[in-house]
Amino acid sequence: MKLYFAPMTCSLSPHIVLRELDMPFELVRVNNQSKRTADGHDFREINPMGYVAALVLDNAEVLTEGPAILQFLVDQVPGNSLAPAAGTWERARLQEHLNFISSEIHGGSAPLFNADIPEPVKAIFRQKLFKRLDFLNRQLTDQDYLMGGFGVADAYLFTVLMWLPTFNIAIEDWPALAVYMQRIGARPNVQSALAAEAATLPV
Image (cartoon, rainbow, N blue to C red):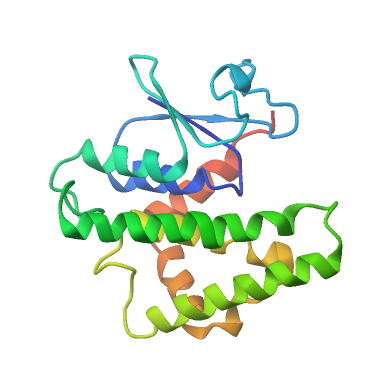
């Protein structure tokens, strides 16, 4: 399978999970501006929306949207520790976490990337994001990960929290989140994923 990615985007989370599951895959870089891929294609022919991540299976099926990709991947390796089994109450809890991260942290951060949005408006988005970070900080004060051990929701949350310095937001203002980021950043497969992405040549 192929994972289409761009550095410092949400595609890092399935990249981490592929390595955690020890699944074979090819990493293909996408230029987010030109929408060209490192292997010479128009990325919009793979994902018409034009954004990463996109997972292309060996049968040419394409899956997009990070939470869907993450759950598909873990279901390919039965008995892994990264997600509860499908159909269980715990799996519904995982989906709750993934939807929260997607809508409140990932989606809540998106306006801060937009140079056309005036700073006073961005300040409103920041304050809403800060409330969500307050919630996560309380949740992670007495636990190492979102659900027991490290899982796919942690890979996703780690990925989007990495964007905070881009917005001049200091993770240290939320001590439990700062420790959480250090803990996940120290995982060998996280370090390998970051190094592999950094080593790819720009498209």
